[in-house]
Length: 116
Image (cartoon, rainbow, N blue to C red):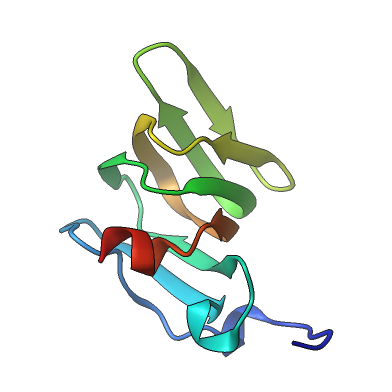
C-alpha cells in the first residue's frame, strides 16, 4: 500500500450488515487493499439505533452530528471532532440524535471478515 487520501465522496455506502436502521457504512480501505485495518465512513439517519456485539476493535471519529454509545457499564455522547473507542467483544448500542451523524472509522481486524 501507499500513502493515500480519502474523502467521504470516495465511499460507496451500504446498509450496515444485519441492521434495519438507516445506518450505512462505506469502506475506503479494507482486506481487498492488503492493509491490516478497515477504514471508512459511516452515515446515521436521524434518531436511529443499532445494537451490536463487536467482533472487532472499532474507533469512530464523529465528523457531523452527535452519537451516543452505551454499554451495560457506561454511556458516552460524542460530537464533531470527538473520538469513541469500542473494544472487541463489547455489546454496544449506538444511537444517533435528531440531526443524524457522519463518522469516520477504523476497525481491527477487518469487520467484514469478522462478521463473515
